[in-house]
Amino acid sequence: MKNRYLVKCISILMCLSFLFSFAGCNLAEDIKVNFENRISSVNNVSAQELTRLIVMSINDSSKTSDAYASINAYQLDNLSYSYFSEYLDILRRNSRQDNNGRVNSFRMMSSSECTSIVGSLLANRFGTLIGAELLYDEEALFPVYMFFIVDDNGVPKISNDWVRGYIDTYNYSDHYFNFLNDENSDGVRALITPSLNDPAYTEEAISARVRALCDYYRLRVMSNVGAYEIVHIYPGNMSVRIPETLAVDGTSFEEHMVNFSYLNSGNYNIDDEVVIAGDLNIVNLVSGENRVLRVGNVYALSELVQRMGSPISSTYYENNNSRIVLYPGVVLRFDESIDSHNWTGTLTSIRVFGNSSVYTIGYNLYVGMSKTALLVAYPFIDENDYEINVSTSTGDYTVEFEFDDDDTVRMIRVS
Image 1 (cartoon, rainbow, N blue to C red):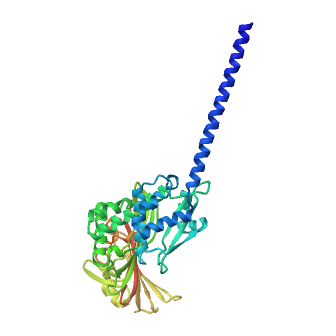
Image 2 (image 1 turned 180 degrees about the vertical axis):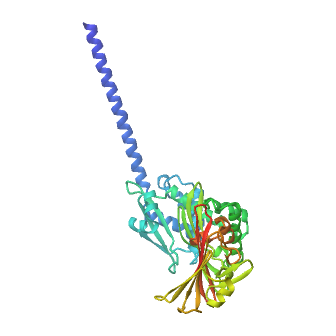
């Protein structure tokens, strides 16, 4: 009995010892965590101070290392010095595009204002944001912002993901514009190809687009690369304004906008639509090498019969003073017509359809051509919903296309 009693006492003592030991470990761990949190909170700086440190570095690049050292590791979000420095280089470049580059002050922005600037998708991705607008001697044409994420305890942080995404976006645009400036067609091709996922974009079609881009930047872009202006830049999204480009008429200047948006795997969609002067011949109905009719011209029935033969039908619409004339594979509309035997009217629309048509629009647009062939002839037509706009002495006209299920042109309309 005594032995059994002794064993029971020893077991109780061991359990108590284990419990006190476990409680002691938890207590020590709690004290350690609280102590570290108190030290961290003491070292945390406010969003205003983060902004001040960055502004100090923008104004004087030699202060970059001091600014980095003044921010604790938690608020740097494990951001390396090289990324921090590169981020400031871009902010410094942005500050110089409209001003002398020196930031005079800054204005803090609320979370709701930040969301309205960057958009809800980006805000949802990064969580609560606060930020600052940088202010200069003169109001910037395109404001320069910086943003911080805020943790659950209200501590502002320089987001590692934000900064790296910001830098990646800038570098992609920088490569693109430098490739174009150097007429590096292989480099341009590598950057634009990931977004050209339509099967119609064969190697031939992509090559035509690359040539058109290189020609545009060589012949019509007047601004130096260093003069391109960043309208806005956020992780995965950027807009750039080229101040001076030669307009399509060749006699005036206009700005040109280029947009970058993230796709996947480090690739971006580049929205760089180049307006190319339309071939004036595409307002003509052509048979072989002969121009038969031209939109905007006035024709009499007798002249039409001489050029195309007798029509299948001719219907006059008194309510709008127009006439629809039908030939095999061709529909013509004449306005300002009259209901008479030998009528006259202004040709305002040509529609070509059906594989049996012997007519083309201009010399290179025809029913039955593939979408790829169209993209080779007009590399940016897909950016304009497969329409071509052309200005002539008689007016402005639009050429439209319809495709069948095999991406083959089944109808062309000029109006």
